[in-house]
Image (cartoon, rainbow, N blue to C red; front, side, top):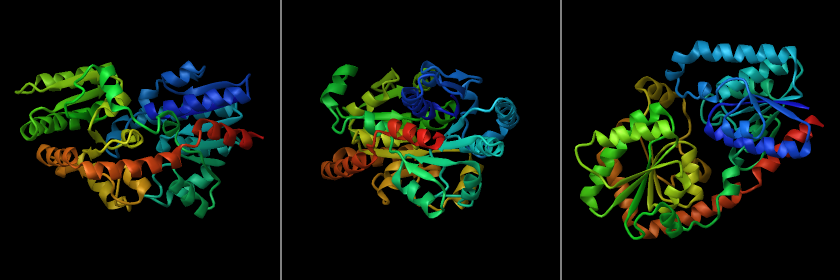
Length: 376
Protein backbone atom coordinates (compact mmCIF):
# COMPACT_ATOMS: atom_id res chain seq x y z
CA UNK A 1 0.00 0.00 0.00
CA UNK A 2 1.41 3.37 -1.12
CA UNK A 3 -0.32 6.48 0.14
CA UNK A 4 0.54 9.90 -1.29
CA UNK A 5 -0.12 13.05 0.73
CA UNK A 6 0.54 16.77 0.32
CA UNK A 7 0.20 19.25 3.20
CA UNK A 8 0.86 22.95 2.79
CA UNK A 9 1.31 24.39 6.26
CA UNK A 10 1.66 23.67 9.98
CA UNK A 11 -2.02 22.93 10.62
CA UNK A 12 -2.04 20.50 7.69
CA UNK A 13 1.10 18.84 9.03
CA UNK A 14 -0.73 18.17 12.32
CA UNK A 15 -3.73 16.70 10.51
CA UNK A 16 -1.52 14.63 8.24
CA UNK A 17 0.49 13.19 11.13
CA UNK A 18 -2.66 12.03 12.93
CA UNK A 19 -4.05 10.54 9.74
CA UNK A 20 -0.82 8.68 8.95
CA UNK A 21 -0.68 7.31 12.50
CA UNK A 22 -4.14 5.77 12.23
CA UNK A 23 -3.69 4.60 8.64
CA UNK A 24 -0.58 2.69 9.78
CA UNK A 25 -2.75 0.85 12.30
CA UNK A 26 -4.96 -0.35 9.44
CA UNK A 27 -2.14 -0.89 6.92
CA UNK A 28 1.05 -1.80 8.84
CA UNK A 29 3.07 -2.23 5.64
CA UNK A 30 1.92 1.02 4.02
CA UNK A 31 4.40 3.62 2.83
CA UNK A 32 3.73 7.37 2.79
CA UNK A 33 5.23 9.93 0.42
CA UNK A 34 4.67 13.43 -0.93
CA UNK A 35 5.10 16.76 0.86
CA UNK A 36 4.76 17.13 4.61
CA UNK A 37 6.19 18.86 7.63
CA UNK A 38 8.19 17.59 10.59
CA UNK A 39 5.25 15.84 12.26
CA UNK A 40 4.35 13.85 9.14
CA UNK A 41 8.01 13.03 8.54
CA UNK A 42 8.27 11.80 12.14
CA UNK A 43 5.43 9.38 11.37
CA UNK A 44 7.53 7.90 8.56
CA UNK A 45 6.59 9.99 5.55
CA UNK A 46 9.10 10.59 2.74
CA UNK A 47 8.78 14.30 1.88
CA UNK A 48 10.05 15.27 -1.57
CA UNK A 49 10.03 19.06 -0.98
CA UNK A 50 10.07 21.34 2.10
CA UNK A 51 6.49 21.98 3.14
CA UNK A 52 7.30 25.66 3.72
CA UNK A 53 7.57 26.21 -0.03
CA UNK A 54 3.80 25.73 -0.30
CA UNK A 55 3.00 27.99 2.66
CA UNK A 56 1.84 31.21 1.02
CA UNK A 57 -1.43 33.13 1.37
CA UNK A 58 -3.17 35.87 -0.59
CA UNK A 59 -4.04 36.42 -4.23
CA UNK A 60 -1.24 38.91 -4.77
CA UNK A 61 1.37 37.26 -2.53
CA UNK A 62 1.24 33.93 -4.39
CA UNK A 63 2.25 35.55 -7.69
CA UNK A 64 5.84 35.92 -6.52
CA UNK A 65 6.07 32.13 -6.03
CA UNK A 66 3.88 31.01 -8.92
CA UNK A 67 6.54 29.43 -11.14
CA UNK A 68 8.08 27.53 -8.27
CA UNK A 69 4.69 26.19 -7.13
CA UNK A 70 3.77 25.13 -10.67
CA UNK A 71 7.09 23.35 -11.00
CA UNK A 72 6.61 21.41 -7.76
CA UNK A 73 3.10 20.35 -8.75
CA UNK A 74 4.26 19.31 -12.22
CA UNK A 75 6.99 17.13 -10.73
CA UNK A 76 4.47 15.38 -8.45
CA UNK A 77 2.08 14.71 -11.33
CA UNK A 78 4.88 13.20 -13.38
CA UNK A 79 6.13 11.07 -10.48
CA UNK A 80 2.71 9.65 -9.55
CA UNK A 81 1.52 9.15 -13.10
CA UNK A 82 4.62 7.07 -13.71
CA UNK A 83 4.21 5.12 -10.47
CA UNK A 84 0.62 5.53 -9.22
CA UNK A 85 -0.09 5.41 -5.47
CA UNK A 86 -3.17 3.63 -4.15
CA UNK A 87 -4.66 6.94 -3.05
CA UNK A 88 -3.74 10.62 -3.04
CA UNK A 89 -4.76 12.75 -0.03
CA UNK A 90 -4.46 16.51 -0.35
CA UNK A 91 -4.51 18.22 3.04
CA UNK A 92 -5.72 21.83 2.83
CA UNK A 93 -3.74 24.02 0.34
CA UNK A 94 -6.72 23.78 -2.06
CA UNK A 95 -5.33 25.91 -4.90
CA UNK A 96 -2.35 23.57 -5.10
CA UNK A 97 -3.95 20.26 -4.15
CA UNK A 98 -7.25 20.28 -6.02
CA UNK A 99 -5.62 20.74 -9.43
CA UNK A 100 -3.11 18.05 -8.51
CA UNK A 101 -5.95 15.75 -7.41
CA UNK A 102 -7.89 16.29 -10.61
CA UNK A 103 -4.91 15.40 -12.79
CA UNK A 104 -4.24 12.27 -10.76
CA UNK A 105 -7.90 11.24 -10.72
CA UNK A 106 -7.97 11.49 -14.51
CA UNK A 107 -5.34 8.73 -14.43
CA UNK A 108 -7.56 6.50 -12.30
CA UNK A 109 -5.95 7.30 -8.95
CA UNK A 110 -8.38 7.60 -6.04
CA UNK A 111 -8.28 11.06 -4.46
CA UNK A 112 -9.28 12.56 -1.11
CA UNK A 113 -9.23 16.17 0.00
CA UNK A 114 -8.92 16.77 3.75
CA UNK A 115 -10.09 20.23 4.94
CA UNK A 116 -12.61 21.94 2.76
CA UNK A 117 -11.66 25.20 1.08
CA UNK A 118 -13.99 28.09 1.90
CA UNK A 119 -16.11 27.32 -1.14
CA UNK A 120 -19.25 27.93 0.92
CA UNK A 121 -18.07 31.52 1.52
CA UNK A 122 -16.73 32.65 -1.85
CA UNK A 123 -16.20 31.35 -5.39
CA UNK A 124 -18.96 28.77 -4.86
CA UNK A 125 -18.62 27.57 -8.44
CA UNK A 126 -15.37 25.90 -7.36
CA UNK A 127 -17.55 23.03 -6.17
CA UNK A 128 -17.82 21.96 -9.83
CA UNK A 129 -14.03 21.53 -9.95
CA UNK A 130 -14.03 19.82 -6.57
CA UNK A 131 -16.59 17.28 -7.77
CA UNK A 132 -14.28 16.45 -10.69
CA UNK A 133 -11.15 16.36 -8.55
CA UNK A 134 -12.02 14.21 -5.53
CA UNK A 135 -13.63 10.90 -4.71
CA UNK A 136 -14.16 12.05 -1.13
CA UNK A 137 -14.12 15.33 0.80
CA UNK A 138 -13.29 15.22 4.51
CA UNK A 139 -14.54 18.24 6.45
CA UNK A 140 -13.63 19.53 9.88
CA UNK A 141 -16.90 21.33 10.49
CA UNK A 142 -20.55 20.23 10.17
CA UNK A 143 -21.73 23.25 8.15
CA UNK A 144 -19.18 22.34 5.46
CA UNK A 145 -20.50 18.78 5.15
CA UNK A 146 -24.03 20.12 4.78
CA UNK A 147 -22.91 22.28 1.86
CA UNK A 148 -21.31 19.35 0.01
CA UNK A 149 -24.30 17.12 0.61
CA UNK A 150 -26.47 19.76 -1.03
CA UNK A 151 -24.07 19.79 -3.98
CA UNK A 152 -24.04 15.95 -4.15
CA UNK A 153 -20.29 15.69 -3.54
CA UNK A 154 -19.21 12.61 -1.50
CA UNK A 155 -18.34 13.97 1.94
CA UNK A 156 -17.62 12.90 5.53
CA UNK A 157 -17.62 15.22 8.54
CA UNK A 158 -14.82 13.90 10.75
CA UNK A 159 -14.58 16.62 13.41
CA UNK A 160 -11.42 18.47 14.38
CA UNK A 161 -8.40 16.80 15.96
CA UNK A 162 -7.78 19.83 18.17
CA UNK A 163 -11.21 19.38 19.75
CA UNK A 164 -10.13 15.84 20.66
CA UNK A 165 -6.78 16.90 22.12
CA UNK A 166 -7.73 20.06 24.03
CA UNK A 167 -9.53 19.34 27.34
CA UNK A 168 -13.10 20.51 27.76
CA UNK A 169 -12.06 22.55 30.81
CA UNK A 170 -9.07 24.92 30.94
CA UNK A 171 -6.91 25.35 34.04
CA UNK A 172 -5.62 28.91 33.74
CA UNK A 173 -3.73 28.92 37.04
CA UNK A 174 -1.84 25.75 36.13
CA UNK A 175 -0.90 27.31 32.79
CA UNK A 176 0.43 30.42 34.54
CA UNK A 177 2.54 28.28 36.83
CA UNK A 178 4.02 26.42 33.87
CA UNK A 179 4.98 29.75 32.29
CA UNK A 180 6.16 31.19 35.63
CA UNK A 181 4.09 34.35 35.22
CA UNK A 182 2.05 36.34 37.72
CA UNK A 183 -0.96 34.28 38.82
CA UNK A 184 -3.13 37.32 39.57
CA UNK A 185 -2.21 39.92 36.93
CA UNK A 186 -4.46 40.56 33.90
CA UNK A 187 -2.81 38.72 31.00
CA UNK A 188 -3.35 39.28 27.29
CA UNK A 189 -1.94 36.80 24.78
CA UNK A 190 -0.75 38.42 21.54
CA UNK A 191 -0.64 36.15 18.47
CA UNK A 192 0.19 38.07 15.28
CA UNK A 193 0.50 34.91 13.15
CA UNK A 194 2.92 32.15 12.22
CA UNK A 195 4.19 33.51 8.89
CA UNK A 196 6.81 36.20 8.39
CA UNK A 197 4.43 38.35 6.37
CA UNK A 198 1.70 38.13 9.01
CA UNK A 199 4.06 39.10 11.82
CA UNK A 200 5.45 41.95 9.70
CA UNK A 201 1.95 43.37 9.23
CA UNK A 202 0.38 42.64 12.63
CA UNK A 203 3.32 42.42 15.04
CA UNK A 204 3.92 46.16 15.31
CA UNK A 205 0.18 46.85 15.46
CA UNK A 206 -0.30 44.39 18.32
CA UNK A 207 2.67 45.82 20.23
CA UNK A 208 1.28 49.33 19.84
CA UNK A 209 -2.04 47.94 21.05
CA UNK A 210 -0.23 46.67 24.14
CA UNK A 211 1.15 50.15 24.73
CA UNK A 212 -2.38 51.57 24.53
CA UNK A 213 -3.69 48.94 26.93
CA UNK A 214 -1.10 49.97 29.50
CA UNK A 215 -2.80 53.37 29.73
CA UNK A 216 -6.14 51.66 30.52
CA UNK A 217 -4.75 49.03 32.92
CA UNK A 218 -1.20 49.65 34.19
CA UNK A 219 -0.86 46.23 35.88
CA UNK A 220 -1.49 44.32 32.65
CA UNK A 221 1.07 41.86 31.25
CA UNK A 222 1.46 40.26 27.82
CA UNK A 223 2.38 36.83 26.48
CA UNK A 224 3.59 36.15 22.94
CA UNK A 225 4.07 32.53 21.80
CA UNK A 226 6.34 32.53 18.74
CA UNK A 227 5.57 29.81 16.18
CA UNK A 228 9.25 29.02 15.63
CA UNK A 229 12.74 30.42 16.27
CA UNK A 230 12.63 32.63 13.18
CA UNK A 231 9.35 34.22 14.27
CA UNK A 232 10.72 34.61 17.79
CA UNK A 233 13.69 36.61 16.51
CA UNK A 234 11.41 38.70 14.33
CA UNK A 235 9.12 39.49 17.27
CA UNK A 236 12.06 40.33 19.56
CA UNK A 237 13.37 42.78 16.95
CA UNK A 238 9.98 44.48 16.89
CA UNK A 239 9.93 44.70 20.70
CA UNK A 240 13.44 46.14 20.83
CA UNK A 241 12.38 48.85 18.36
CA UNK A 242 9.72 50.13 20.77
CA UNK A 243 10.38 53.42 22.50
CA UNK A 244 8.72 52.20 25.71
CA UNK A 245 9.51 49.02 27.64
CA UNK A 246 6.53 46.70 28.02
CA UNK A 247 5.90 43.75 30.39
CA UNK A 248 6.02 41.15 27.62
CA UNK A 249 7.02 37.50 27.95
CA UNK A 250 8.02 35.87 24.64
CA UNK A 251 7.96 32.08 24.44
CA UNK A 252 9.08 29.63 21.79
CA UNK A 253 5.97 27.63 21.00
CA UNK A 254 3.63 26.93 23.94
CA UNK A 255 0.75 28.70 22.19
CA UNK A 256 -1.91 26.62 23.95
CA UNK A 257 -0.33 27.26 27.35
CA UNK A 258 -0.08 30.99 26.68
CA UNK A 259 -3.72 31.17 25.59
CA UNK A 260 -4.83 29.06 28.54
CA UNK A 261 -3.02 31.40 30.95
CA UNK A 262 -4.50 34.57 29.48
CA UNK A 263 -7.67 36.50 30.18
CA UNK A 264 -8.09 37.65 26.57
CA UNK A 265 -6.38 36.69 23.31
CA UNK A 266 -5.65 39.18 20.52
CA UNK A 267 -4.85 37.15 17.44
CA UNK A 268 -4.66 36.89 13.68
CA UNK A 269 -7.53 35.13 11.95
CA UNK A 270 -6.82 31.46 11.29
CA UNK A 271 -6.64 28.14 13.09
CA UNK A 272 -5.56 29.90 16.29
CA UNK A 273 -9.09 31.31 16.64
CA UNK A 274 -10.40 27.74 16.90
CA UNK A 275 -7.72 26.94 19.50
CA UNK A 276 -8.76 29.96 21.55
CA UNK A 277 -12.39 28.84 21.29
CA UNK A 278 -11.55 25.32 22.48
CA UNK A 279 -9.60 26.83 25.38
CA UNK A 280 -12.73 28.93 26.16
CA UNK A 281 -10.92 32.26 25.88
CA UNK A 282 -12.48 35.62 24.94
CA UNK A 283 -10.72 36.94 21.87
CA UNK A 284 -10.38 39.80 19.43
CA UNK A 285 -9.69 38.64 15.87
CA UNK A 286 -7.76 40.82 13.45
CA UNK A 287 -6.08 40.55 10.08
CA UNK A 288 -4.24 42.83 7.68
CA UNK A 289 -3.30 41.84 4.13
CA UNK A 290 -2.11 43.48 0.93
CA UNK A 291 -4.62 46.21 -0.01
CA UNK A 292 -5.32 44.72 -3.44
CA UNK A 293 -5.89 41.26 -1.95
CA UNK A 294 -8.32 42.70 0.61
CA UNK A 295 -10.14 44.71 -2.06
CA UNK A 296 -10.60 41.62 -4.22
CA UNK A 297 -11.69 39.35 -1.37
CA UNK A 298 -14.16 41.89 -0.03
CA UNK A 299 -16.00 41.73 -3.34
CA UNK A 300 -15.98 37.94 -3.59
CA UNK A 301 -16.73 36.77 -0.04
CA UNK A 302 -20.43 36.24 0.67
CA UNK A 303 -20.14 35.30 4.38
CA UNK A 304 -20.38 38.10 6.96
CA UNK A 305 -17.59 36.58 9.13
CA UNK A 306 -14.03 35.32 8.69
CA UNK A 307 -13.25 33.82 12.11
CA UNK A 308 -14.08 30.20 12.92
CA UNK A 309 -15.93 30.96 16.19
CA UNK A 310 -18.39 33.18 14.33
CA UNK A 311 -18.72 30.81 11.38
CA UNK A 312 -19.40 27.84 13.66
CA UNK A 313 -21.96 29.77 15.70
CA UNK A 314 -23.60 31.36 12.68
CA UNK A 315 -23.52 34.70 14.50
CA UNK A 316 -21.02 37.13 15.99
CA UNK A 317 -19.55 35.62 19.12
CA UNK A 318 -16.21 37.43 18.91
CA UNK A 319 -15.27 40.84 17.48
CA UNK A 320 -13.47 40.93 14.12
CA UNK A 321 -11.40 44.04 13.40
CA UNK A 322 -9.80 43.98 9.97
CA UNK A 323 -7.53 45.93 7.64
CA UNK A 324 -7.79 49.73 8.04
CA UNK A 325 -10.02 49.35 11.11
CA UNK A 326 -7.24 47.42 12.90
CA UNK A 327 -5.71 50.43 14.61
CA UNK A 328 -3.93 50.10 17.97
CA UNK A 329 -6.54 52.36 19.56
CA UNK A 330 -9.51 50.35 18.30
CA UNK A 331 -7.94 47.01 19.18
CA UNK A 332 -6.93 48.20 22.65
CA UNK A 333 -10.40 49.51 23.44
CA UNK A 334 -12.03 46.25 22.36
CA UNK A 335 -9.60 44.09 24.36
CA UNK A 336 -10.08 46.30 27.42
CA UNK A 337 -13.87 45.94 27.20
CA UNK A 338 -13.53 42.15 27.17
CA UNK A 339 -11.24 42.27 30.20
CA UNK A 340 -13.94 44.14 32.13
CA UNK A 341 -17.02 42.15 31.04
CA UNK A 342 -17.21 39.07 33.29
CA UNK A 343 -20.88 38.33 32.56
CA UNK A 344 -20.27 38.21 28.82
CA UNK A 345 -17.21 36.01 29.38
CA UNK A 346 -19.28 33.38 31.21
CA UNK A 347 -21.88 33.22 28.43
CA UNK A 348 -19.14 33.12 25.79
CA UNK A 349 -17.46 30.19 27.52
CA UNK A 350 -20.76 28.30 27.60
CA UNK A 351 -21.20 28.87 23.86
CA UNK A 352 -17.62 27.74 23.22
CA UNK A 353 -18.15 24.56 25.28
CA UNK A 354 -21.20 23.61 23.21
CA UNK A 355 -19.20 24.01 19.97
CA UNK A 356 -16.34 22.00 21.49
CA UNK A 357 -18.66 19.04 22.10
CA UNK A 358 -19.90 19.21 18.48
CA UNK A 359 -16.35 19.03 17.07
CA UNK A 360 -15.07 16.32 19.44
CA UNK A 361 -15.44 13.27 17.17
CA UNK A 362 -12.06 11.42 17.25
CA UNK A 363 -11.14 13.12 13.98
CA UNK A 364 -7.93 11.23 13.19
CA UNK A 365 -9.70 7.87 13.51
CA UNK A 366 -12.73 9.07 11.55
CA UNK A 367 -10.55 10.38 8.71
CA UNK A 368 -8.53 7.14 8.52
CA UNK A 369 -11.73 5.09 8.54
CA UNK A 370 -13.18 7.15 5.70
CA UNK A 371 -10.01 6.66 3.61
CA UNK A 372 -10.05 2.92 4.37
CA UNK A 373 -13.65 2.65 3.22
CA UNK A 374 -12.76 4.42 -0.02
CA UNK A 375 -9.83 2.07 -0.61
CA UNK A 376 -12.03 -0.98 0.00
